[in-house]
Image (cartoon, rainbow, N blue to C red; front, side, top):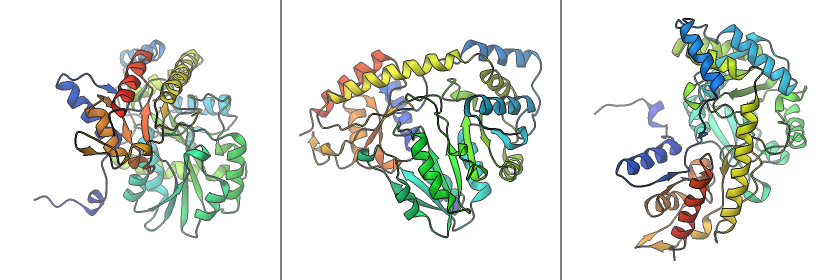
Length: 397
């Protein structure tokens, strides 16, 4: 028997990837499954970005890049931050990685020591706690209910901070809830952090451009805490480039240098071709971003209507990303064919096996009364998926 490291034995598999895998297995058996479990745009990468990748191949960008990414890409990211966010960064403060997922992990590994506490608002993206555990830190959860739009209050944050607190991870727009913190809400959060100069922030803004309430607000916009905020972003969601694997941080110089050192030892720079594609994504042509945002907004409105017609599901009005996160606990204790639904994971499996719709139970997101459904698929698929969900749930007695 292979004796794995304690580090790996403490790590849980990704629930979202596991459900996607189960969905794929059923599809391989010939079952028509509609997959609402994956956080991935269903659009193709825009043509001008693909053209830039072709050109990079023709121009022989086939060698190792600098560890933090090509200077031209880092300059393009600085341009984006200034143009869209009013934030000034130098290329030395940008580190490009193999997706925003690695970017988050880099920062945690660079900052967190054994015993450090990391505050994670719940519901949370499934990988945050596991990454903290990997860094030998201690996750501290702050729960926000559907009644408060899944957003923590300044009072809750203040109560969670202890002398051991090293970091806050804040995701807005949020995965899994789609909730978006307003400028005023973030200003109140920043006011709390002002009192705690040893607490840093990872501001996960990967869904920045999928926002239905106007201009994006970032904790990095507040001068009093700017030098303790690490922005995490990338091209996956806004430009339909999930498979290209380009994420990045904009960070205080010391943190950027630390992540550069860390990344230099275990992956080096990300794909050279993907970097040139990302550089084109941050160019002058941003029409594709708005086209996709409009499509997601239309789908959001469609899904809100469809969910409202399903008795037993309670939903908020998410203002970003491409998820709904309805409360589903009304079905707990009910049964079908001798099987009882005890929790959200049971319900997700029931919907997959009986309704042939893949969702993800809220347990993995720190919200056991909810279930995550992605609407990053066609209108036709959404109409059919929620018809199946409604039909399946009606069988539970």
